[in-house]
Length: 104
Image (cartoon, rainbow, N blue to C red; front, side, top):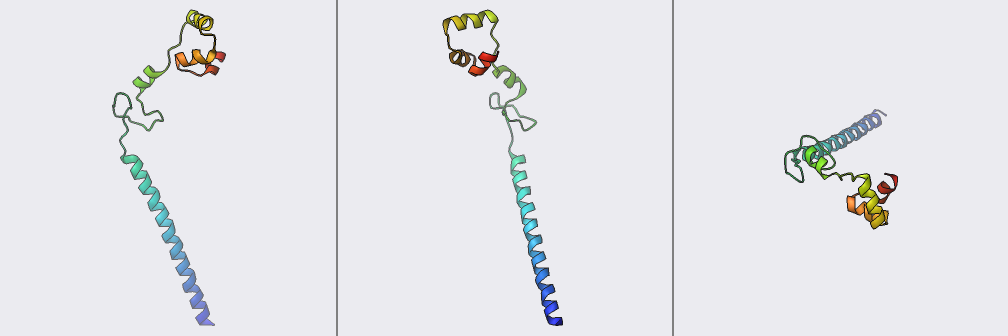
């Protein structure tokens, strides 16, 4: 009877050790992934200056502001509507979607 109890205890200890090893391996993999992300220097895709944060656009604030589309005046839009006639083409001209032209 005691032999069976000792064997059961040994089995549970081995299972616990295996589970701990698996958990440690998972933690180590996560840490390695985080190191890879931190090691990558992020630079602006336009002017190649070093970026401080991890933005989605890969552009610095100056380049991001200059890349945004310029809003035309109301007269220019009226002329474009009269000449071009499709909102899709007007949107392509200004780098926006046709829904932006409809709603704007």
